Image 1 (spheres, rainbow, N blue to C red):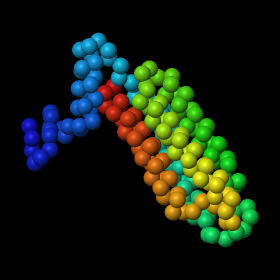
Image 2 (cartoon, one colour):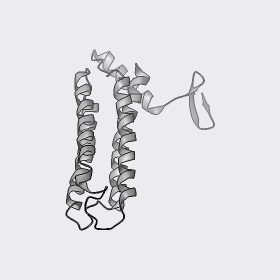
Image 3 (cartoon, rainbow, N blue to C red):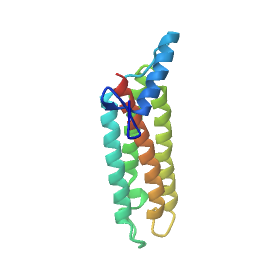
Image 4 (cartoon, rainbow, N blue to C red):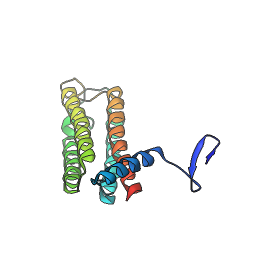
Length: 166
């Protein structure tokens, strides 16, 4: 039944991603190859925490930038090495978890892409460390934050899609 331009099934609004995922699952089932990864709540929680930590970190870098050339600034790369190490550890744990789950290739690929966004931010921060103020410019942080938000958001959507088929 269609009402006011929205598709409904059993009184609920249908979700296109769920329909597509179920269609693919049905085709695979007919062919004898059911391989839909299972939703993992721990991965979901870890991604949500990573999103929060990333947003907090980017806000810290933006808020501590003042354009001065004071050594030992809070926004300098050297003052934030531990944060980058923690991000690598968190993403490494997510990768290990994703690899341990059956047929979780899409998540593994997305995590590799996510790792590269963090690597790009760290590289830009290291390069900014050679500037007089030792800090990455807030304008550059906006693009990096969007890339990370997009990557993490995509991973969260993937996990929620798995939850809808479990």
